[in-house]
Structure formats: structure tokens, C-alpha cells
Image (cartoon, rainbow, N blue to C red; front, top):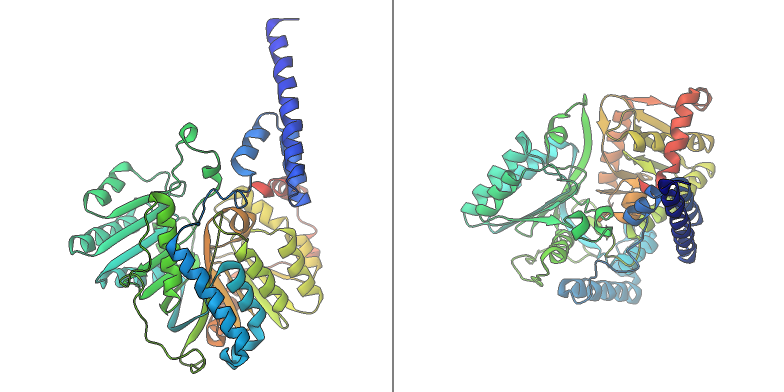
Length: 492
């Protein structure tokens, strides 16, 4: 036996021991059985690589609190505010407006699980393209008087990115406080010169969870900040799916880039501000507390005195490794099970966990019209095939599946019964539900839900509608791609 053969046997033996130990650890954690089994298969079938993948992508740090809110003053304010609102709603059942009483359980879920206050807003404006959203955000930033807080998963050194960079630098030169948070992995290709221009001009330009490979924890690579937030002067806020890059503005390599973003004026802006400042705290360990300039008083009527035509009720929900619960996933599940007529869902990536998958199938089997819009072509090959792997069981349950064929639909929205809707940064996939820092808003307003649904129906004209019988006859080659991609769903 040669020297290298001995070394190989030793290495395989060491890996076998490590794989058995890792498998035992996975089982001991008592996670979702399907996900646990998937990871054990990956570890056993991919020597060494499987272990590395598990170390980077397989661990749940929500329970270990790698990002801890303990001691954050603003978080304490949110907690006390949510307890107070829950107490008031229990004490006086008529405190909730008549049109919101049927959503009491959903509102309470978000209050208890996510400390998400029910807010009253004077304006909510929807944008159905990145161009509309980015132009409106640009205009709002131009009018800023006191501070600008911008957070984006992606910022690129292109025409759109430089347009925003120049404006933000200009506002900083005028004395406006400008703070920008970007995700280190989402902006991996951002040149150092681009960043340097920001910092040298007085703009606070911060990378969330920078990955320095061997110099930083492995967990940071997997837990990314996918939020898109803009807060101007504490009074106007934006959230949704739009990042700051040319493809969001003009479509890039796609014929059209459909997205959904929204502008909020009112009490819910404080929740966006709180999320931004909490993420900033995780980066530099500095707190602002509840300074009035960041949380200005907003004059709005009492929640009982405002009618649907003059105000918009909403809750802003955040989720990530810093939260106690998978709050956005829980909100999605509760919203889906609330449906009695129809569910309209748009997502670019569809890899749901068993709870959400069964909720959709049960709704459809129970007579609810469930319509899901997915992209026909994606910007992620493996995720695309994994998404399509769910089409067959959706069709079998009676779900209507539409493939957006005139470009790429990047929207992340759900509308229920034409009465309330959810808009934000979270995709309908494992990564958004379990790993990423995400933010979304649930809007309890029929007019906003109707606008979303009208746009959905309009977009179906640009879609291919899947037929169960025809889909079952797709090529064996494609079915193999879907099956292989489905095995990788825990990583996606």
C-alpha cells in the first residue's frame, strides 16, 4: 500500500467520523425532519464539501442569538408599545375600527410575535416598476431637510448607482445627515473607489456583516440583509423589492423588470426607522434611542375615528436571525389560512417550507382561488428549476400557476380576498423565511389590495398559464433538473 493510499484511507475515515457526528448534531437539534434529512444526505453524498456547505448554510442562528437585540433602547420601546396596544385592544374591543375586527387574530399575532404596532398612515402609494419607485425615491431624497437613511441589498457602480451616489453626496454637503447600509455579499463587486467617495464626503456608508472569510464567523456568509428601506426626515418611508441598480430601472438583460414598491407617510414610518437603526446598531454598536428628529410626532386622528377612505392601517414586520420567531413566515401562513375567496401571490423564487406549501394546497382544495405568478426566466438558474419543481403539486391541488414571460417579475406580494395585502422584500422561499434579514408591510385596506389585484390581472396578459396535462408532458430532461434542484432547496 502506497503512502498516498494510506493518507486517503485516513482522510476518508476522519470524514466518516465527522459526518456521523454532524448527522447526530442535526438530529439532536430536532429541526424540520425534511430539512434535517436533506442536510444529512448532502453531508453523506458530498465528502468534505457537504460539511463545508452545512457550516456555511445549514445552521439556525435565530436560536443562538448571533444578533442580539438585548439592551437596545429602541427595541424596548417597541416591546412596551406592543404590550400597551395589545392591552388596550383587549380592554376595549371597540378600539379596533369595524373593518379591522375580522383581522384581530392576525393583528395580535404580529403584535405578540414581532412587536409590530398597528399604525395609521395618511398615504400609501404603490409603484409597479423599478423606474417609478427609484424616481420617486430620488425626488424624496432631493427634498430631504434633516436626514436620509437608505438601506439596500444591492447597490451597483452603474448609471443608477452613481446617480444616487451623487445625490446623496450632494445632500451631505448641504448639511443633511446621510446614512447608507448595504449588504456585503449583495455588493460584493462594488469597487473600493465607489465606497471611498461616500466616506470622504461625510456619508456614513456601512457594510452589513462583512465577510472576511477566515477572519470572520462562517455564519455571517449565510445570514444576509435583504431589506430595502428608505426613510427621509422620519416622515416618509419606502419598502419593497427594488434595489439600486440599472436592471431595476431599465430591465437590464430582460425585456421588462416588473417589481412592486411602496411609499408610506404616517405612523408606520417609525417602524422602518427602527429597523434601519437596529441594523446600524448591529454594525457599529451605537444607539440613537428615540430622538425626536428621527421619530417626529405625526398628527393623525385617533385610530377609532379614522375611516378607510382617509387613512391606511398597517403593520411593519421584520424577520431574521435577530428575531425570536420566523415572523414573516407566520404572517404569510396566517394570511393564507384567512382567505375565503382568493389569494393572489407573486414571487420570483418559490421554495416554500412544508407549512406554507400545505397552507396553499389546503386553501385551493377547500375552494379558494389560489393564483401564483412566477417568472418564466429567472436570474438564478438553480433557484428557477427548484421553483418549477413545485408546479406539479400546485396544479394538482387546483392552484393556477402563471409564468411571467415578458421579462422578469421581481415582486414579492400577496393579496387576500381583495381586502388586505402584504408587500415587502421577502421572497416566498426558505432563505427569506429562515435566514435573511427581511422586512414587509401588511396593509389592511381594500383600495390598496384592489390596486395590487388589478395589476396582477393586467400582468396575466404577459403570462403563460400552465395546464396540468401539458405540464405533465414536459421533457424528462427538465424533470431531472427540477428534481436535482429540489434536493438543494435547504441551501436556497
